[in-house]
Image 1 (spheres, rainbow, N blue to C red):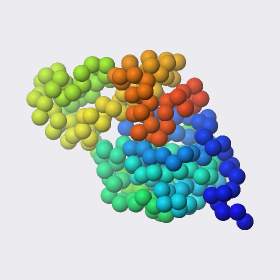
Image 2 (cartoon, rainbow, N blue to C red):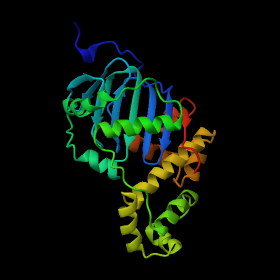
Image 3 (spheres, one colour):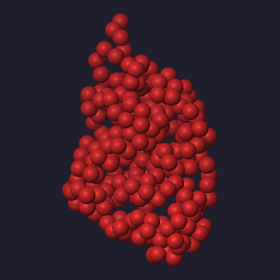
Image 4 (cartoon, rainbow, N blue to C red):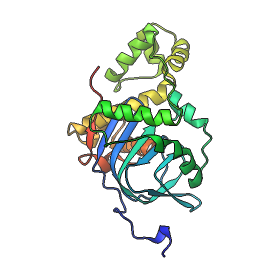
Amino acid sequence: MRPLSERKPSVSRIPTWKGRLFFGSLRLMYVGPLGETRPHAHHSFQILLSLGEPVALRDRGQRVVTCHASVIPPDVEHTVVGGAGSVVLLHVNPDDLVGRRLRTLGIGAEADAWRYAGEPLRTCAVQSPPRRWAESEALAQALLQALQADTGAPPPSHPAIKKLLRLLPEVLEEDVRLSALAPRVGLSAGRLSHLFGAEVGLPLRPYVLWLRLQRAAGDLRKGATLTQAAHAAGFTDSAHLSHAFRRTFGITPSEIAGVVDWVLPPPE
């Protein structure tokens, strides 16, 4: 029998993203087919659950594992060498409360560690892939609870932070440094930095980046070009957007724009 790494791939070498992409605050979930990939890394935790056949993953040391579930830590090189027809991929911001809880799992850079970390996910019974936003949120919470990473933190309560969270999506094209935002909510930059981290669970800068990526995704969904989406979200150009998207999720917007079914959260 030929080694697993030499078998003919079950899906195309480059993934055909034909599923649904749920892009919300500090979470991104893809549901659909998973094809083989090139070696890559991204700055988010990747939680994987196959709804059918197992997936084969290879680490930087060329070790290969097959599994139905895995958790790959941020900034760790990995390769999909055997895809599956239906998977759930949940990307989690590594800098927020949930991401910091996942860091305490101490997941290593070896493929065996990813499979071991993902074993609790197999307790999640998924009757059918989510189609609506509420269904994706429920599944995300179930996955995080299985990993004991759902902190259940209360929403921000300080008036200045609540005001800033309402303001930020409207000013992504403007100066969003602490020094520029602090006067708009009546705080000093130092006080705003401390309060934002305490109430939101992560520093302002990564939060703004995620908002920008979400904004760009929303504009692409509406038919905007990469350049239009980049500028509207506060990126310098389309290359800047593509780089940020790839660094965060391991793919570029051009690989999925016009192919996946984008699902954004309902307006508040």
